[in-house]
Image (tube, rainbow over all chains, first blue to last red; front, side, top):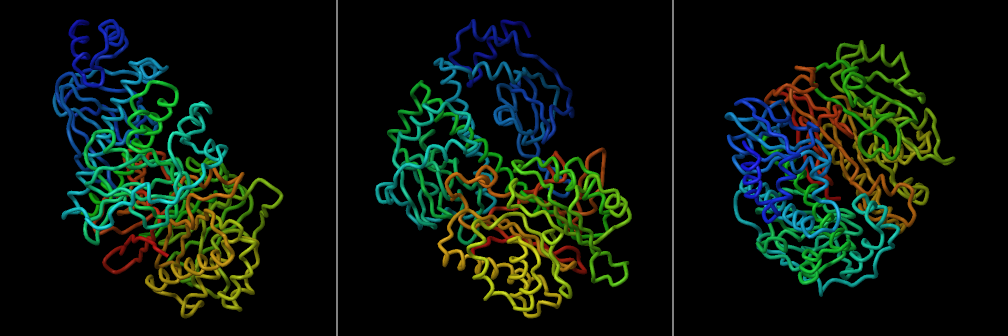
Length: 321
Length: 306
């Protein structure tokens, strides 16, 4: 593959679309090219190899190790598709094992070069962050669709969500408390404050449906105190796909891609929430300043945690088959 | 934050659980991978049932307030013992003059004459305010046996007091009900005293034949201002399990064999290996029950709504 061909390939990757040619040429220079044979592993689940892979040609299969030493095939990826972004972004082990199913060529972008693309407040960095968030949202939807299919039936239609206007207003939390949350303690204090004052605060009792599965969400919610369950409900069967405790968010998927919410969100404990109505969400999502960066990073972190959670019930279901 | 471990299944060398893996319980005492704002240096305790031993219904007991990693006796003992059930615990306490490191505070708790043991990972915030209100819910004979200063020993006495016969061997269903009832009483007493801050109660209760474990917290997500335990409790206190056949090292990795129906279960505050791919997270707000039956291990998880 010549340098020219590599640049052309990268230009067609959705994540990098719109980058100028000089940037792509620089990227092509730092990326490693690898060819693996059919049956060869690119990495194992739990492994700590930090790189973003783009499949140039060939095909790979992804699999999940489940309790009892069994392996469940999860999916496949082919030319133009991306692998490894979850472990690269959150620094934990790979969520799935990946092996080539035929002779496969990949381009690999290392951790530090990837971090350089996201650094600073350049428009290209914001565009990349937004695309990553959209990509992770699509992956989460895909995973949740598999889980919902395993339950069968249709989403519950009762428990209409409470509008944010109907919830009890509250004063903001102590900023020292918020800064002690792992989600926020390495953020710039002024930018964090800007984000935390962008919306309004409400209190909710336990058992309150705030987002209904299959309906659009009216707002982005961030849990300050308490806990909110993200659940798939089919009759008396349910799968909890996440628990939004302090510093975790919910209700944002449909604001990102304009589609209905893939899960319901119901308070498990009484809760104090930051609520950003959809118009405020839109502004923060598309702005390119320090506050917007905090916002995008917070969503990204939340998506990564939720994706990892969503894979856990999948393992449990697989092991009971 | 303390770390607990429980095993139920076919005979397994105790050292496989306590020492051999790269995140074994003993290693978690000085190098926990999760919730690591506290080390677990305030002692080690273990109860282990071996059906081939004398008085097989009575567990082996080992307790020490010293660091288990330097304890050669424990290492020798763990190499010779292959229990069918084991409950072990490494204890953490706050880094202050209020923490009491003493033999009487070591888990698993086991009152003389009773057949149930308990290990706890968590803490009831403002426990001194509610301690004496619990007396009316605890069998007086059991209350007299409380020797230590921990909330955990009171939770143990409370669960025993919910059993029809605190000195008998309850079946799994009764043990699970007693545990859930004890949590309901704690919720009522907390409410009566206006206590509404996060208080995790991950317990493991066992008779040697059955195991009941909870991953639970009262008022999760609510903390007193300037709380020293905040960073520890912001995530829901962890609990994991692995289920299958024999737990052994295969191709360099410690894993359970994929037996169906399962024959063995390990429950632990964090996976015993750094590679957690063969472990499953116990869902938050849930109870896990297991019992060794003639057809294998009977195992269930359910939502714990108390």
